[in-house]
Image (cartoon, rainbow, N blue to C red; front, side):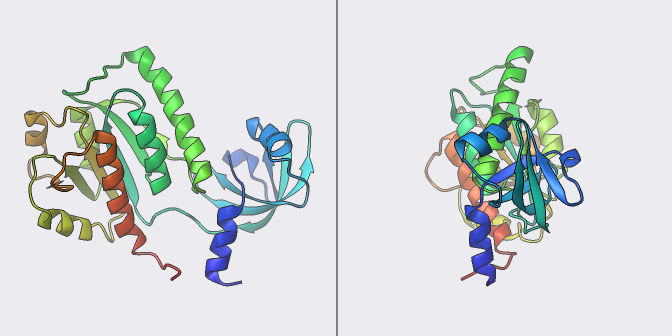
Length: 262
């Protein structure tokens, strides 16, 4: 079987995530809601192959060997069956949008390979979340990230960070090897092209996306020359569109580092 065929097999397998303590030397024990999903929704039987990843990273090809009342045992066939992760970590800092746009950003960013998503409270955010609403939203957002990670066959479940204010977020973003700030008032694509080309070889890249109202002047001033302020084109993009566009561009540059089947 060639490399491309092996990758296709991984894609069509059903994927499940487990905690480290559920992984033994010879088999993995799946518990919780995935048991019902395997038995009653997918109607899988002993002898069928699945792909299992630990939530901290690590991949396994497994063979279902036992379907218990509240557990599924899967014998390990191959450890580290091949990661679907990018060679570098992408941190997406998203100005909190209204409605369901944050959910859309999380779903698509996870599919595109994001490592962590940080919701950011910014001056022009329409939505203002108190402590209680933040906790409720965070739980829902993490659930969306997990579902998207399963669907896209990720090797990890990206973390949704608790909400940060802009100053905290900027300090965190600047700790990465590179920080990109797509800005609607930035003109010219030459700088964007150069910045994106520099993504290759970086182990961590931050992307800061403004909310519906855009960046406040003082927020851009705070960036100064500490990050790369870039344009995403002549058109004004919605905040969720800007996030997905920037993610796709950075993901493409990172993927170019890895060997592809043609």
